[in-house]
Length: 111
Image (cartoon, rainbow, N blue to C red; front, side, top):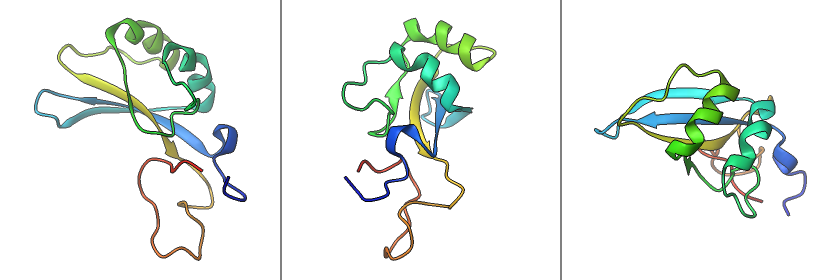
């Protein structure tokens, strides 16, 4: 475990629901709060990745209706592939902290 890992227990995270059209271009993006994520987490088979820090998870059709209710999203569009994954959301900026040669700008790194 990384000392002072800022994402332990889902801290400093938000989740992004993204939709990609047939041309694989991003056509929608919605931020999901911690509270909303806690309501929908059980809809996904996460195994040991309980905070979705290992990457984006596909949103299958059977999960779309309950997810839509929780995040108050208008509609899931036909022909669009949706994915949900964690992103860093810390007031201290990007991870890793100072002293590292390059900042991390993507999904949250696992400890």
